[in-house]
Amino acid sequence: MEKTPFPNSFDLIALYGRNTGYSDESDDCRIYHLNNETGAGTITIYHVFQGIQAAFNDIHMAYCNLQQNTASNMIEINHCTEGRFECDAGEQLCCYMAPGDMAVKSSCTCSENACFPTRHYHGISIFIEPDRFSEELLAILKMLSVDFDKIHAMVSNQNQILILRKNETASHIFSELYTVRETHRAGYLKLKVLELLLFLTDTKCTVSNQTEHYFDRQSVSLIKSIHDFMISDIQKHYTIPELAERFRIAPTTLKKNFSDIYGSSVYAYLKTYRIQESQKMLLRTELSIAEIANAVGYENPAKFSAAFQKECGMTPSAFRKYVRNRVEHD
Image (tube, rainbow, N blue to C red; front, top):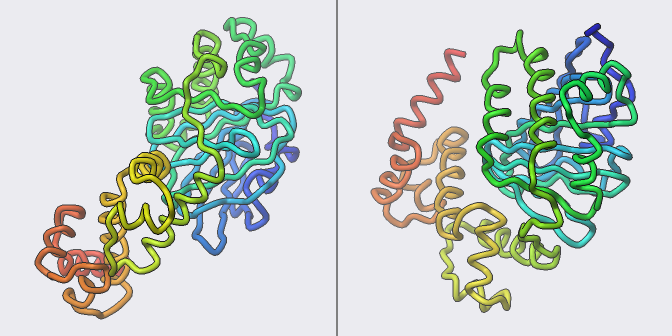
């Protein structure tokens, strides 16, 4: 197929927000940089076919944009390899993608939030605009027996999402895209996108028969408030019953919803969060190990060091020395 210029009609700013700009461009690829008060991210967009784009997402922020308007008549396919991604399912509902999950949705005129509860997300997004397909692409799809009408019908209700949890076939299709050499990525994308469309043509899973668990926005907001309360002062320790009483929620509901939204239990999440905060202090301050241990909620420096080593594979002092030496040599 002939190489076509990167389409001007594909507006990433409409998808990811105004704090977006690209620093590099070729006929097949643009690299975008995002930032806001919650962090930063990099998104590399590839032009695959006329009407089909692919985005490699490296996100370290709480959200990309709030209440943005997406392109009309578009099918969006997302695959998560690390972190968590909050998917809209209409104005009042949402669900969550975990590593290995693939989501298919229609983005027809609906407003959506690109949110990442753990401020960490790596994945691939495929944006498909059938109205822009070339005659050549339509011929290829027909030759391969790709039934795009069936794929579109799967998610014709814009308030619902088709999520395939840790599907082995889907994961295999995407896995090679994460590891292929940059020089071969554009070609691989063409092959893998066609393979993905053929896989979706054959899948028997639909939104209507899916038992996906959705969360109402009010419940999500309450869990996020509990999360923000806990991390506002990580020197303090709270039990599940204490949090449940303070926020007027059943303990079992708190535990289940927190795990579904953040991907781990309350205590496991806080343990990891404390270690992550201690890493920042080790690199950005001259505080002693004992002072950092106390700052992140460990009264005993020995217990902090043991927890840190279990999480990071080295002691806090070794971590500080190792990373600082690397920065100096870089």
